[in-house]
Length: 114
Length: 114
Image (cartoon, rainbow over all chains, first blue to last red; front, side):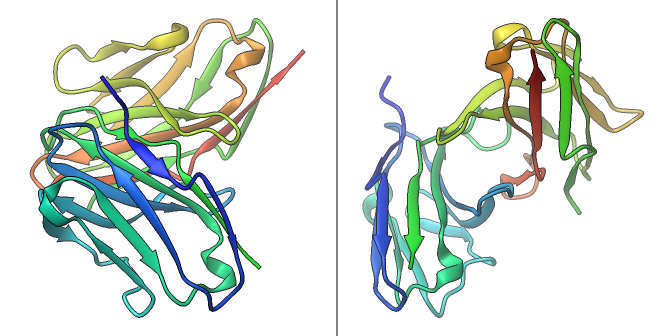
């Protein structure tokens, strides 16, 4: 079974530039999550999708971050314009059924804003 | 409200001695609980999960955890530490009755002394 795929793995951009991250969850998984993990901290949920609908985006900075999951499969997370404090690892995760199933994580996309 | 508290931000043990990483949770429902490990520059890997079956859960690499409802705890243990266990460990709670919200603890950095 293929895992959660993320790209790019590493990205360095200047502040005020834009960046986009892509995630392809495990086939058939209905729930998809994007997390932000700042160095030395635990992951923080940015947005949760159930199929192609948003379940929770309460911690997504909507003035600069956006995410979509067209057709309920892969997803894109965009940051525009980037700030220095956006430097972090962006983790995508997916899950088959809510509640009890294992949550599978991708390797992460490492963003450095200079 | 849901919450997860990892009681130690850093734990140091000597190789060959027991490991104890502590986690307490707060949940309104019957939660599912997970421990994930993150090695430097790597993604999150599932160690073990509790999903209301046996209260003593065995995971990979010799780790296990015991769910104690009366103490709202889910501590992670290993009888004998190995150098390769040095990593960041995250306790995670998922509430099936709350839109499948997943909450991470802040993490515990495990150091193994030779």
